[in-house]
Image (cartoon, rainbow, N blue to C red):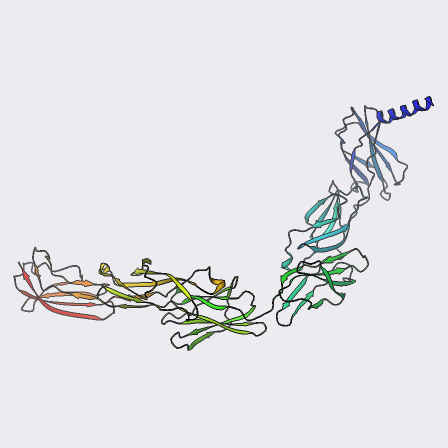
Length: 595
């Protein structure tokens, strides 16, 4: 019994003492055919630290099970490759490596690699999962040459790399499934040395693409889909299954279709249900292989007359374009909108804008730019709605912010605007007015914020009498609705068309002037004149012309045309000019020269 105990202790000590140390990491065995058949064997230093490096040994055999013979001994640790020459090109060769270090124990064996071509993985399916295409293949785990799998397009360009010979899945996060059919790529293998194993492009995989139309009129959802491609020369599919997730409950299979039928009508729902729908293609022979289509998730809605359809504003962009905005309940599904242009005084329809190309702003707001808007008179716009089920509705109208402009005195203009913008049944509040003013085509400046309870404003422009007299105005009104619940928190505005007035040109002539006095020259005062034409002539009492000017700012200083000062007496003037209205005016009279 003692001897047995001693033997067991010794064996245990030896197993601890004589441990295995690391073998070289065999990376590639590549067949070379240039200059005669040969194999290149490459490896990596195992970074063993148990002792001093002595050598790496390479063993080879033409049989996977052996026997293996020593091919070469490498004594330089920096060497990482060896060329096995003189091989028979018809044979398959297998290799493994060991190492030697100045420490007790023995070397582990490296992986055994062969010089056969790189295998390529078998692509099983491409499925749409969580809105991304997912590739699944059979990995070649037993083939030690494989370092990674690569996604390759049909032009042989690398798209992405999945490192690890046991990997079996790739997610293409670059594709947006809402853009249409996904065209799959090839899956190949690659060694650390760059040797490739590429599948021949026989069958190109394309997952099912589901198209879905929710019918708001017939209480059903129509769906159709493309066939799965890639499971054989005729795109073999065992069958298609339709899956629906309703209101967050677990997904259920609601139909199974023969592989030749790629349509289905789903009716088992109520409007307002939240639905997620997708189709599953079943592999013709592999029970555990399938592919899902893209998925649609939405709230089912039924077309109905909108609870609220209301014109909101008709704001002038310029005198020829009017921007219309209106609100239509978001649960309504419009097929088209018509806009009626109405005379607000008697309700007569002036014209109809049929099926306008509206812009959908979201949350029930729509807009349209009427490029032929009315700027010569006030009009109202009314919205008319029609949906896919031919339901029709007509909404409330809005009257344009049309103002009138009138000269009511030598220095005054009167601006008037509407008393109401909506019919009496619509409760709304004006928040403020903003009146803008422009001189002779210049930029607009705000000149007033009239009280919200008034509809007219008088503007005194006496300080601008020396200008040409063309004044333009526009009015902005800001308002909100008081009772239309979806619109209560919003502020709307309407801008009027620009209205302009050419002030009447007025001429005033003095009846006397005094040389070297306060008014040392005789000249007119002319208001709002654009100087297109002006002429003033002075005659003495015998009718001889003694002065003439074309400049309304250049007066007569009493010097006659002969250079002599005129005597103190009465003289005659004749003034002619073209006013801002284009009418030529002549005015004559007498005045006295005082010395």
